Length: 168
Image (tube, rainbow, N blue to C red; front, side):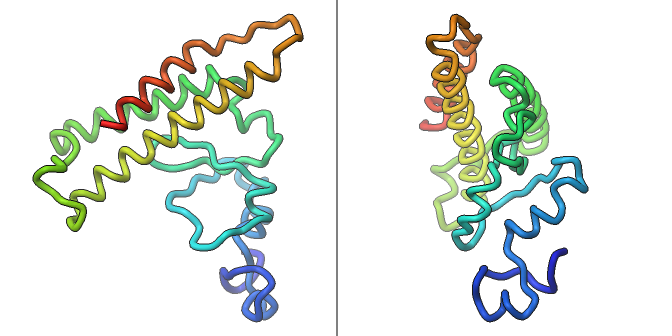
C-alpha cells in the first residue's frame, strides 16, 4: 500500500499518510500485470482515478485497466465480447444450478436481501451490455473513413439484446 490508510485526497487524513484509490492502483497495477479486479463502487469521486483508469466489466466484478492500455479493450471489441460472454456463461450456469434462478421480484420486494441479488445480477449484466455497445461504437467510429470495416455487428446486436433482457 502507498500509505497507512485509505482516504479522500487532499484532506488532513491524506496528508497524515493516507492514500487515494488512484494511488493504490498506481502502486499496484504493474505488480499484478494489470490483473486487478474490483467490485462495488467508490464511495467518493476520485477524478485522478477516472482520468488514469477504466473499469472493464467482467462478470460480477470489473477489471481495472489503465486508460490507453491496448489490452484494456482486450485488443478488440469481439475478443471482449467472447471473453465476457464466457464469464457470464459460468455465472449463469452456476447461479441457475445453485439457486434455480434469480429471486422472484414479486415475492421479494426491494426491502429484502433476496431482491439485492437480483439487482446486482441485472446491474452487472447492464454494465456489460453498455460497455460492449460503447466499445463497438467507438471501434466503428475510429475506423470510419480509413477503408477498414471492423467486425462490430455481432457486438452491437448482442449488446442490444442484453439491454432488452435486463429491462424486463
